Image 1: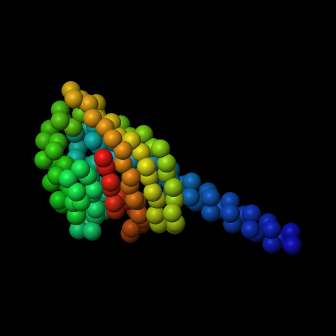
Image 2: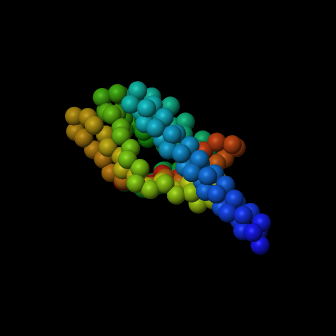
Image 3: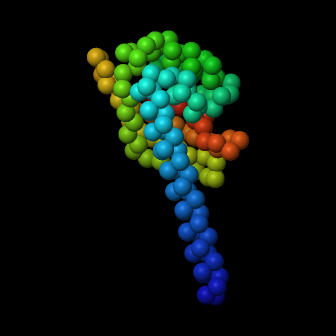
Length: 139
């Protein structure tokens, strides 16, 4: 009985530790993403998105499908460093849904001449050994 209880406790601890490690990895990736944006590097910012036609970006104009189209829209909306401003993410919730899926809710702020901001929900998935955003709903 004692051994069985000890094994269950160890398994729960390892599972929680693994979850904490994965969510920390995603938060660290978002810090890198924020840094790329603040350096005026949209391609660097986009490297954290799934490079697939199945990527979904949901914004005020509806759903955009695909990495290339999302990149094109970012470049159109933010043609230079001044338009990009300085990005700041605030993570409100980061929940691991399974071994390969993390759901993030947060706020974004762009400091520039006309500041802007809003909220986002991101679905990160572990694909081919790395965490990538597969769905982004930003308002």
